[in-house]
Image 1 (cartoon, rainbow, N blue to C red):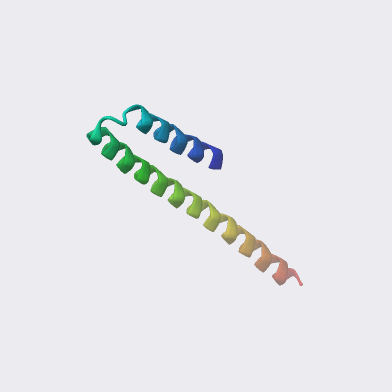
Image 2: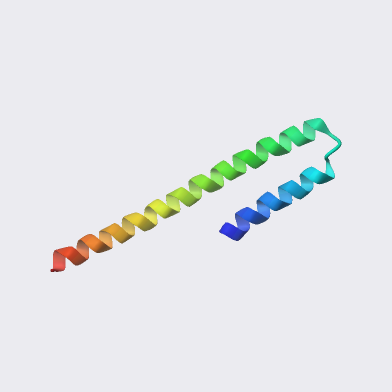
Length: 66
């Protein structure tokens, strides 16, 4: 997932360079980049939270067996 997000960011940056002469397009690209990065960060945070919940549930189950 990390490589995918980085690929999107680099692709968007490359596209921004191609249309660098248009101020409107640059603003639109920056806005879209920020939105995608926020969504990606949110997704990553959710996945980390799920992983930490599973880890803590596993630790709780192990403590209950002792």
